[in-house]
Image (cartoon, rainbow, N blue to C red; front, side, top):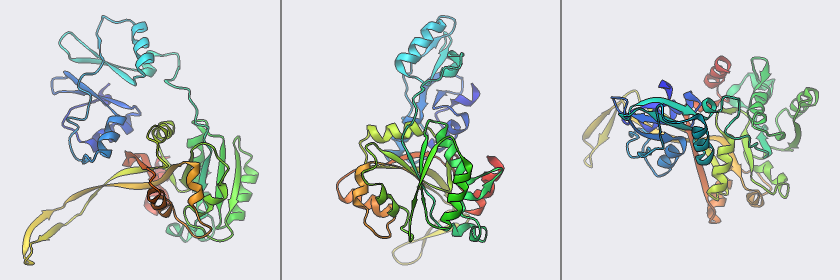
Length: 348
């Protein structure tokens, strides 16, 4: 229960990390006396970030201040189950007569027979962009294509695929170019439970160019991922977010915090020192390389080198909407660079 509690003075960034580490989708907000004052969901945090809230700001004003609660000793398990099912809650706080939080009921806790909140499966195909040279991992990628770089007993690409098969995805399309024959040979001998196919670029087409070969293949939105990222997230929630907001493209963005380890100088209009900012911190939303695309965007892709950034600009020029789905920094591992690759080896 301790991992699910937070005080209103924590930042949005800290709340994201707390949710990510707890594996839950909601926090209980209490004051210093453990009196319940609200609940905070991952959706509340996303909406705040997308409204322009700084992730360094406290969660005050973001959390739900009038949550549904159960009174300790005065509810039955059947009543709790009914609320969970009807309201689709992730958790329900339990308070005593003084309003102090004495317990937190989660879906898993109340349905202790192994029943999950939702058995909804994600049947969208996943396109994996696996054609790059992986120059950031040279000299190893001079010999082995980046998707087949090993992490323990499996290559990177299998770790990525497993994240999707765990939620129901059973078909993958691999866009390949660099050392394509090695990647083909690996999968042909693998004999996996899922199905796969290849799009082979005759020459490099960028981070989105090969998607043009999928025109007229899909009727529903589909996922596209880089071949060097692992993201721990609710893929079904991402997909639903894309549909509910009527986006043409939704990109997953990680909340990144950077601290400049020096005092930065701000000048006035005369060129004199105005102020020194000691070790300033900056927050950014960084593109992770995971997307949901509507099939209609494929008609915008020309027959030439073309990147996902070009596609996003062309979608926006057409008057359509591009969405952003924020996630915590710790939920994203970019294995295309050595430091993150080594972190993945240690943590996966």
